[in-house]
Length: 126
Image (cartoon, rainbow, N blue to C red):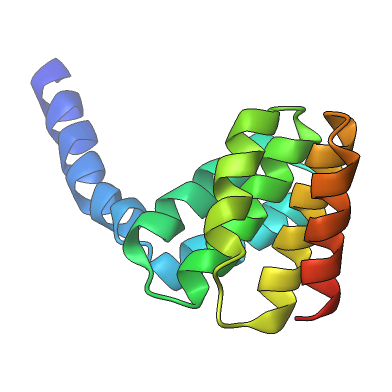
């Protein structure tokens, strides 16, 4: 009976793991966005980072923006800065502008007011 139970469990795992692993990059991006809206910063960052590795521009930069926002909310400024740097190169003006504003916020928090003002100016021209 034990052998039968293990076989059933193994079969279940073999059948369900591909469904979990086969989440498309766009689905991951959508999930990251939902997680961010629900204030689940860790999940938002994780899903967005996974999506970013698989997506092409401009969705790659959108994923980087979400990951950066989640890192910012977790007070992980180095991580946020890296992701916003990717997002600010987006051909989508809204994504690039938001990333530049967030980089400005980080620079302002660091006391780098001139650099922050320059980022805000860049964001305003997007």
